[in-house]
Length: 68
Image (cartoon, rainbow, N blue to C red; front, side, top):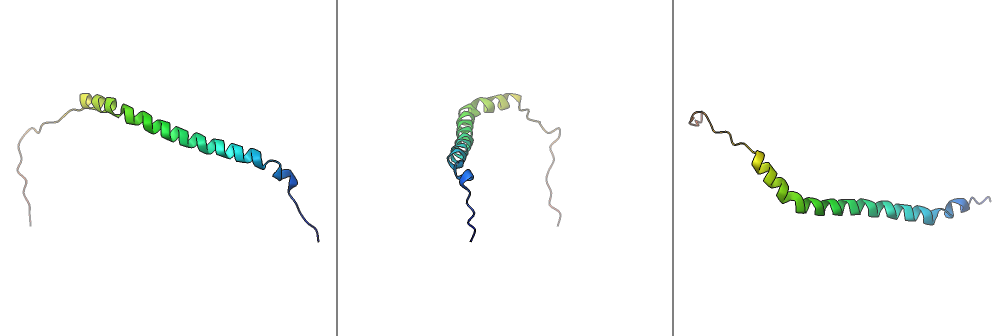
């Protein structure tokens, strides 16, 4: 019986594991840092939105009716 082994790939396993852990940690750190950033800056963004918001007043009063 011929036995096939992948000894060359086995040497790369620790490297691939470290790269994978780095990518996962980078993804979660970006997610956590952006969440914290937007949590602290939400108040300033809401104030800016209040300043630019325009409330439109109706020109005439209209009564609502329901047709059956």
